[in-house]
Length: 135
Image (cartoon, rainbow, N blue to C red; front, side):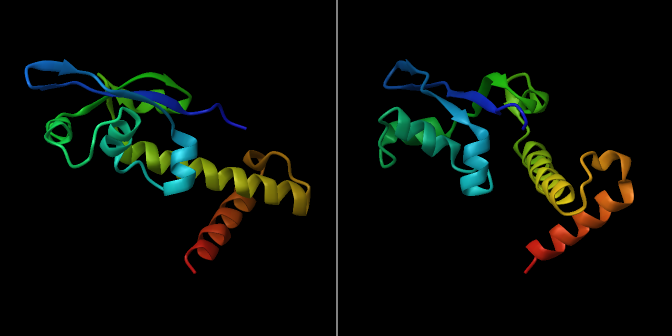
């Protein structure tokens, strides 16, 4: 099993002359498994920090970019200068999930523990798995 992907997401903004820096530790694996994407992070940060989604404070927060820090797992590879490439991370995370499922199938059904030694079988299983997901 892969290392857990987690990160601290933080937004810095000013409201009524005061600096705010609400943050949230995010388990990206759990969030991706549940939602299939990393959308609405501003809303998640606001909710965790008791910021009303219908407030001017929330609107000020939405105007600022989220910065990411203290990354654990492969997500660290997708953070540059505090910015997370959400799309690239999502694609890589999804690829890893498919590969883990295919590895389990290969070991259980045909006794192959290392799919890297059987690239044609690996490609065939991935193709079949993805085709099944399209339905």
